[in-house]
Amino acid sequence: MKHFLFVSVAVGIFSGTSLNSKAQTNVNFLRSDFKGALKNSIKLIEGIELNQENVVNPESQKATVYIPAYVVEPDIVKATVTINAIEACSALQFKYAMLTNQDVESIKDLNLYSFIEEWWATRYRYGGTTKSGVDCSAYVGALLNEVYGFVVPRTAKAQYDVCEKIDKENLLEGDLVFFNTRGGVSHVGLYVGNGYFTHSSCSNGVTISKLEDNYYSKRFISGGRINQ
Image (cartoon, rainbow, N blue to C red):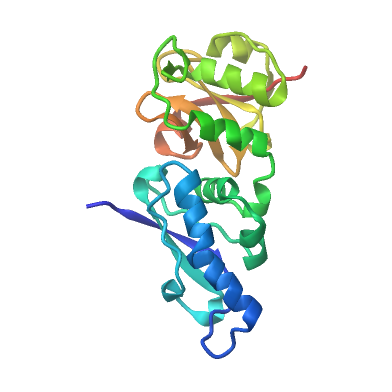
């Protein structure tokens, strides 16, 4: 049986007696058009359910969205957005706001998230450089080149050597994060904000993970910033 995560989304007050015509239009948007857009355009997110009956407490101005646990590593994810933000955002922004526990308004660099989406779930292959299989440093190198125009060395250790070293608390979107997974600098990802990073993992392929997950927090070496 699939397990589900709960995402709290602020969508205005769903009171049966106080909804005006504009609010009702927004509710219908959540229940139909937006759900369809998510299902048709975003991978691994077809299980999302958006409906008025999911309201937990009218005074809290929150509704519940159900998302399959396999979409992100098992943890409770919450995204707080206004009804207008939901209406204006793309399905891409909505998906990655949930995956990184951020407001939709925080997902601004669509080139970055479009790249991640394009490579999402590509399997890990040591030495691989294509969408048939890619390792961590090749994925990060391709991302840096396509999104930021940076050219970096091929391996995680060589990428580490050319970076300005950054403490974890000073990381910014686009910085690299390095780990010791099998001796020395042996794994690299790219920080996307709010404690999350994208990388090609041995177990899940291209995905998004949390720096504070037990496995990665124990193996974190340093952040790195490319200055070109």
